Image (cartoon, rainbow, N blue to C red; front, side, top):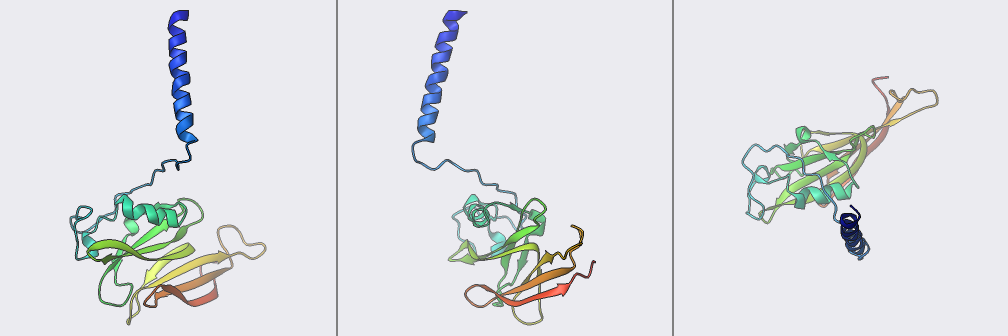
Length: 188
């Protein structure tokens, strides 16, 4: 038994030396990026194939999902919340991708993706926690609405007294806050 154990031990030590050399080589460790299957209404175009409409895009591609998750330093993309809508007021649909915390923090924000030179590209981000929704006024593009709880002393965790509402709209370059207000929580 002793004779077999030594070669196995030498192989194990050698493997650990190689692995420690890789871990300490200065190269960044590989990271895994979740790529949930996002629903699309048309067959997604293979990566690299030019597209005309955002609904043709492969929104689950790591090259797109990775930078979105990295921007929010984590989170999860909920496929059922994917929304196609004109967010810029130009008459062309964009994809609205909601990024959730995966826990009690609620939403982390939204990424808006459009078609640029025949390929999906991130148009902009809205970093807004709490609960994020999209509304559509009669004129212009969509409006992103963020609601965050504001607790007063004695408020239970479930029910803050007030909500901070922020409304974001596209200004031609980025999504900007157009309304920032505190309102009474209607569910209290």
